[in-house]
Image 1 (tube, rainbow, N blue to C red):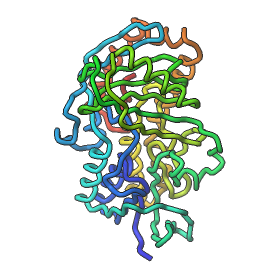
Image 2 (tube, rainbow, N blue to C red):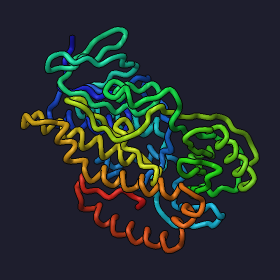
Image 3 (cartoon, helix red, strand yellow):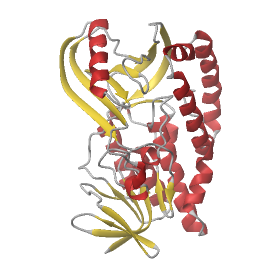
Image 4 (cartoon, one colour):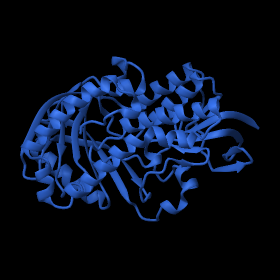
Length: 371
């Protein structure tokens, strides 16, 4: 049975970054991905430009979509339009994640794709990961495989945290044809008839128009309502060429791990519905988890305790944001008030300060944006 210092489950952003950090530090590191890479990932693929600091790499222009997103248009429940200029990274996750996989490989990470984990068993001071054909062993495990029905890490640690019913879902329509949507703009709709979870979105990726929404339930109802609105508002002429979606049965809550199994990104429940983005959190948590395991190897202390200490400020931000999200989605009035001109102005001031702060701060002190 082959043995590693650490095995990461999940070849996305958190897993790739964590594995790179650990391999660079001399740990014998294996990254497992259940699909054949490069693989598709249901995700917006839109992020602020500070993502480059979070992943520790300059993103080549060839890894980004041809159309740059330079403007955000927010539509409030009452139909007010709030516009602002802001540069965003726009990428397809299959291309972006594969690039991160290749960087991990260049830094000494071994990658096994098409590896579906069936079980994780503790054996003395090691863990044995099993699939149908083989077994591999490691001292540490990092679960970075999300919260989809096929994800395994969190289910093994916290089986009671999952239910039979769907607790959250998202869906994207891929539309080809003509529209009046500006190719360099991201449109964000805060309307409870389109989502009871967070905002809905419209933007271009290359020549594909992405029309997406999410919900705690009734995702088909929300997505059809939203598409009909966008079809009329932006004079869509063409057809939906593809639909892709995501569901979870997880009941939520932040769980960083148990013993020597750590969790990162969505698998750790590090979800921020107030901002509606998770790739930056995945990058930060992957970085902090990787550093925590390296420190545990060097000093002989607890990787989980290291991780908890480093993640404290990140978790505090997420929990505060989720409280704000719960309040503003309590009514249409609260949602509209949260997007008042004065609140937008306050957010702009906070964002200006945070951008300066983030240039010089460590990742454990990083301020998540937008505020």
